[in-house]
Image 1 (cartoon, rainbow, N blue to C red):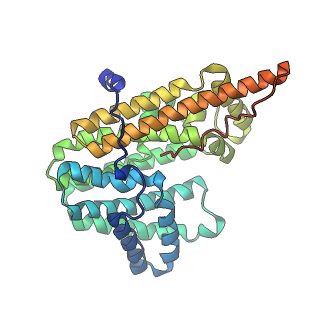
Image 2 (cartoon, rainbow, N blue to C red):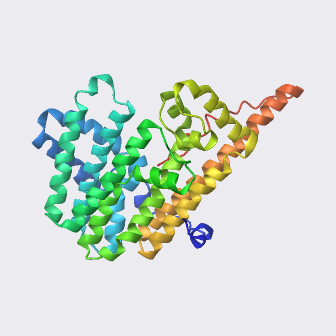
Length: 347
């Protein structure tokens, strides 16, 4: 459970440190990008173009945390810059591997790519393992954690893809399941602690990342509920509003219940409160490390969540006023709730 102190604390406003926004001209980012393509060309030349296209998808602001978390932790733990870059490189290979697997699981891959992606995933996994073997060899305390985190990701991916026996997304179990969708991100975090000879900090780092991921996934699902519902993907925001199965037969009913939660009930305020609760719990853990870069990012994410909640409530109210205006002969405003989410980045 999230501690009462963590729930009630106020995050320090983010000062927008450079890493909080995507920096395509960052020298470390550019080195990793070059090495990414060169390594794919080395182990699987036929996959070079596919790898380059995938890298372009991942080199965007919505993946800022995945790129910079090794640096934030590395700075906090006093790791040399080379070690931080190696962890960044490893993490991006892992991120790319997971994204390919998620595309295949969700059915998002284009038809012409379905033959290429499994081979690309195999190449990425090989490179991912090479990176970590060069840093940790056969070090059991690293590989045991690697196996545990990957097991969490596999279980969460299976639960999401089947859509069965999913706990309510705002319950403790539901939040944990959502967080485990990003469990591979914890691998580089544990690695940073082990390289710094600070293994005792791993529980705090795990807690910070788990709470961050739970909040980030909840926020992302709020942004994506309409497209996920149309595509038949499990969505936590839909599950918050409706206990019905998320299948084709219940698609219209689920959409109606989401709109009821937005327009008639409370503009999903309990849902946003849960997101901010997770962010505050993540910051409580981050401050115990301490990790200023991660805390600054969490403050930024908390502000994004606040803005998203206010935008949803404001646009819902405008839509209600539009309907009332039509009923009573006043001029409609034309606002729509479904179009109100795209003004902010989401993670």
